[in-house]
Image (cartoon, rainbow, N blue to C red; front, side):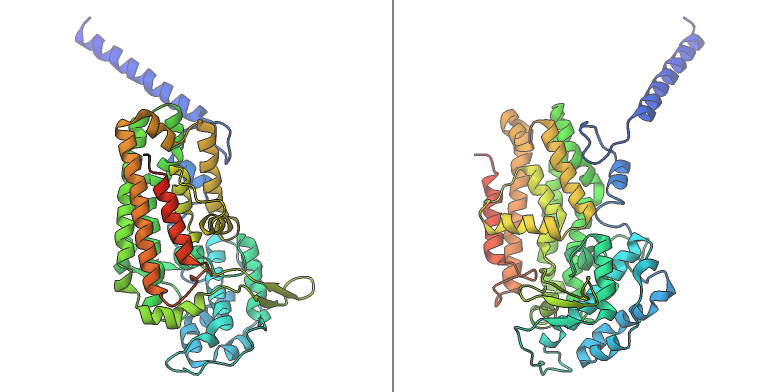
Length: 431
């Protein structure tokens, strides 16, 4: 055959191959959450299924409708109002605004943060020995605080629309309250700021930006879609694709451990413990009364405050690596409560999807690693150890900042809980 004939034949074969690939791609069924078919996911699938992913690519720094300018003004002045003990006057002068004009998810998230900060400041501000106003207000500890309707009614409405309890959660404080100094640069501590705060302290900013950077580190490089695809690869014994995923997750956990250790550079122990920690407390056990909410116009709620345990990614890593916690222990109960009550819907959807895919695969990473040995066993064991080391450092940091407290910011018995998570993680290591 002449050279030009070979070229023509090659071009035809290439065209047929491309056409076959495109036809297959176009005919690929659209994947839905909980789909019984175990199909390989793409980044586009994850973005669609979980409404942009677990960490928003951007946030709104100001509510888009000028109608809500009074809320933004309250948020801007909140640190000063807290410090000077003048928050009550500012809230009394606030109009009660209808939330129906909050039409986007990002606006709802922004409203959730600024209203949540106002509610927490109202409930707990008198428990803070501000340098400008160090005399604590005397209150009967048995009597729940009544949150004024100007902030209680819209906060309850926004929480209902987001599917969250009427309290600040880690999603709000860590994932929805940030902005980039230079949007064209990387997401690093130096290039990040909190949009609004309750104290105006760098300590408050650092306390939330460190976990934000951890979440970003785990999301980057396609790790989320790879985690969801691990069951698919296991089902077809594509271990050569599972190995780099576990290796990447191990490296990410190591980087997160380093970020955790940087907490002492960004968060002052005394400022955190005395000035900011009280504001993060939830409303359990005595609860707070939301004025103007519910059929009777008075609703009492008693949720816990924000906690690192409310971040979905570590629950997902536990699930992927078959890390099980004692079903009768504090860690299991705490994680179950966090997943059931304190995570946004797209986060619980992610966990549910991962669980469904693991069940559909008929195996787990741990079982496959033990059965096959070799590189898969090696990288699986290294990944579990990286998670254990991360939790060891978490316990050390938490003990450092909560040395005089029996409970964490989410009212959890943090020492018992973290010790149990370390033990549960270690028990997943193949012997």
